[in-house]
Image (cartoon, rainbow, N blue to C red; front, side, top):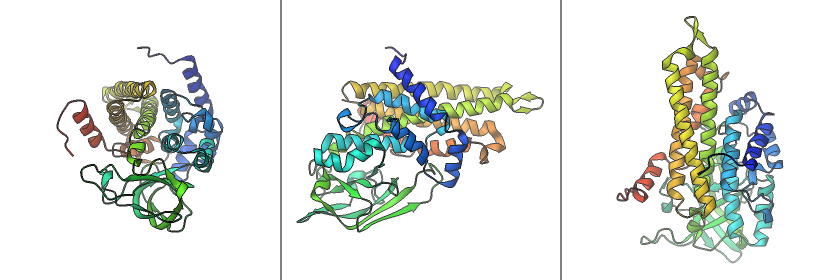
Length: 388
């Protein structure tokens, strides 16, 4: 196996680094403090084609490999940004893939064109208050009408719904079949300005540049062509592509780990206590060295998962979940050691390590918890009984 990047991948790294040089840590810090989406960055990234690079050329994307996208996202995260741009880009690629795979030409004109150009950032709504990670317990219902569909229900922890034009909503179009609960689920593109849609922000301490919301649907009517893919098979349309989300987020986490290690190491080299730099102390050195070892190993898992997906996509679930667990742990451990290195300054807004710490901690919980990811690995890789 060749661990060297290709010339094209080296060019991706250099090009992304050049773009990111226009956005220093203060830019990301201010947007985090003010809870503001980084629109100027998004415009530049979209213009450069980074936000839709995996989408088909026929639809305006670059048709790049997922491994190329992972390299891009890692470079973006480690170049001062941390995890801020990763969620909206990962979501754009994931929702864009669903639309590219399961829509007709008219629907791609309606929903995909503006996503590819970055003019519209999609949101994705699957989680519900009463179901949590047991998504097949969803109660949001879509009922067929003479003119299309009527949706009723509530979604929660929906990122970016307040800035989206459309939300890809997962809803039941048939009653739950206990023998096969994944049947009878369908996908709908719901306009955020539709009558009956209510979007309520949720206060949170992580990823503060992007609003997390509750998303209510009260007799929301959508046209027939807002049904995406085959009626009743929405779960199968989404399931494999959730691995795209896991792998792209993992790439950002690997980059965030590298950024945390860099910030902590630079501070340790210059901060003097007892007439010596604190970086001479093994209590500082060893945790940061261990974080570097773990970060490097986690990144290799991302590259492996992306390679499996790019080759044929089959059986990528174990690799994708393994990469998510490894990178979220690596990013949090690196930021946590960074917090200890910075000492009292770590909790001030002047330094950026606490932003990386907060954001990395979130990704041990979502979009799938590490515990649930590990149960998947235990069942599929180790042959242990299903525990949920």
